[in-house]
Image 1 (cartoon, rainbow, N blue to C red):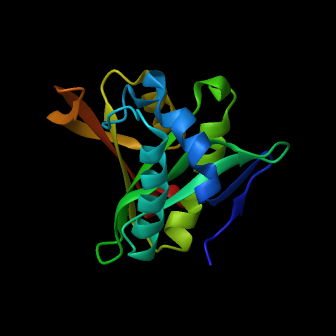
Image 2: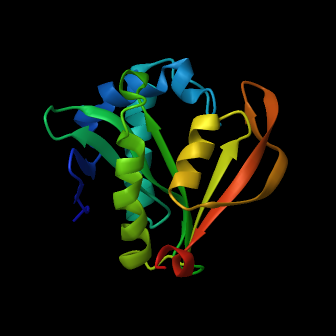
Image 3: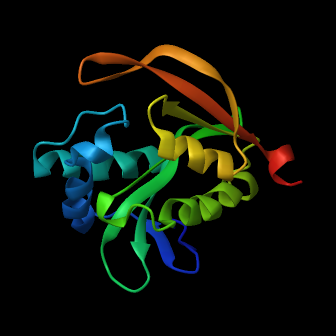
Length: 179
């Protein structure tokens, strides 16, 4: 059973085939993918492939991705979850995106505030990392609010549209989170 997480305003749930349209709407938007390290989607079929990839990663314990849905309306406004999940090493990288229509309303921090405890308490993580383009000020601010610490710069670490970008790596340790 895929875990469902709830917050005051949000339901975090499994991403299903019928969500492919919402996934396409988000990931075909250049504003969303600008700092994502992934090319912008150009066909709805690519969104279907993403949905299938999320399911495969979960089944193979390589990642878990929740769809973010507001409780007052149906349809995804974004996704959040763990990539590069290593149960053996008790670590994963958090990733998220929200459709621009819903930016600035606190949805990302609300969703992350549910996903982080799940990572530590249920997945048994001791470290949650994040890799963020230097230019992505919104993510830097979000991670800092959540208690993540900047660890350093990874030079020319991610290619976006054929250009190498420097990134900042962050971490949140279970021991620090529980204080």
